Length: 163
Image (cartoon, rainbow, N blue to C red; front, side, top):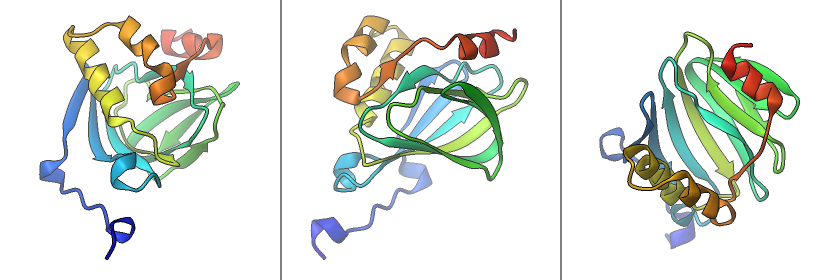
């Protein structure tokens, strides 16, 4: 087999897990360099009260969410949907989106990007910010590199504020 036909196998016990917030874990599964650019995948474990991810968009990839367990609120442009275990949604490039567990719920989510984007260092940056080893300015400076562009969403802000 050549490198482009090799499977990517990640055992649960050896996957790198990062903490990017007090109530949020990211388990790294497959980055772009290991899939020859086909996809990037991680598992997001969002406990009750996790703020999830603020409104943002990507310019080069479709992001996909498959809810493994719990309940997930997702901003999709100008609407908010709630996904339950077994639900799946794709978010095309440039569509503003955000996500967090539903109120008083947890969410366990498989997240994937296609084509793949080098994202693992971005998640490591989020963990460094959480630990106080980096700051929000570092995240802003990385937006082009990681194709993660934050944007305003009054709808999402009202949703997470409970208005």
